[in-house]
Amino acid sequence: MLNKLIGRKKSEQIKVDPVLQEFSKENIPEHIAIIMDGNGRWAKKRGLPRVAGHREGMNVIREIVRSSNELGVKVLTLYAFSTENWKRPKTEVDFLMRLPERFLGAELPSLIEENVVVRMTGEREKLPEYTKRAVDKAVDGTKQNNGLILNFALNYGSRSEIIDGIKSIYHEIDKGKINIKDVSEAILSEHLMTSDLDDPDLLIRTSGEIRLSNFMLWQLAYSEFWFTDVLWPDFSEEHLKEAISAYQNRQRRYGGV
Image 1 (cartoon, rainbow, N blue to C red):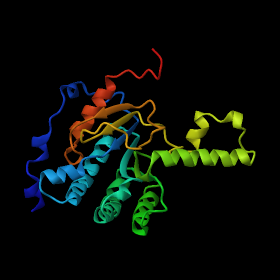
Image 2 (image 1 turned 180 degrees about the horizontal axis):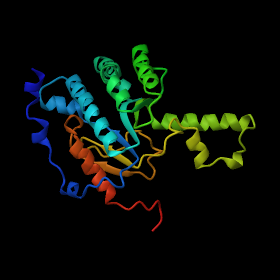
Image 3 (image 1 turned 90 degrees about the vertical axis):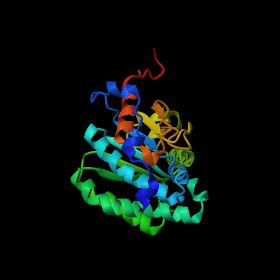
Image 4 (image 1 turned 135 degrees about the vertical axis):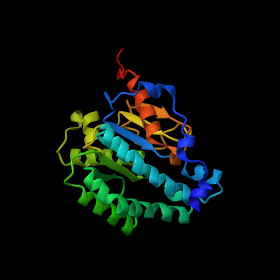
């Protein structure tokens, strides 16, 4: 019934930029971060409840993880739930908190087989126990893998992450473990949640919004940005390649010439 309500097939909705013709399997960004936006608007356009958009968006994750893995991406960070998302209606939040359980419960065998490593970046304390159990099971079940790192930013907020990192550095200074003169960008990076990951090379945001929404503010300092009007449930492998192709046609100067 839901498929009938959705309307056109995804293949009929895809409008790929001509730049995709220049896509190459060389110079693939090692770390791609995605702000998966537009689930609610996708559902509203079809007269469906917002949770239907989140459910369809979950299905898209499956395709993008597979595509990223095949393309040789080393890290895929997905902004799944922000520290600000708790402001949403309780029914929607409850549904979102169940999504890791549903997705990872169904996909874990495939993720293990495809050599994907699951991890989470975010504040665990406020998450429901069933959400933490689902994530922990996936992390533990894939810890022997050494392929694509699928990093879920769950209950994540960049400003609080940076503040916590500064506090951690302060405590180490107070204990004499760090000299204040030695505090540097590298030191702060080592005290963030992503300390063991390289910064994203490419940020993708769907749905037409052009902002970072408190996502990896420190880590994205020199990332390439790619924005699209496509809503996340309509995002496809072709759109991913379009974003990568745009990345491949840019020169990253890091402040130089």
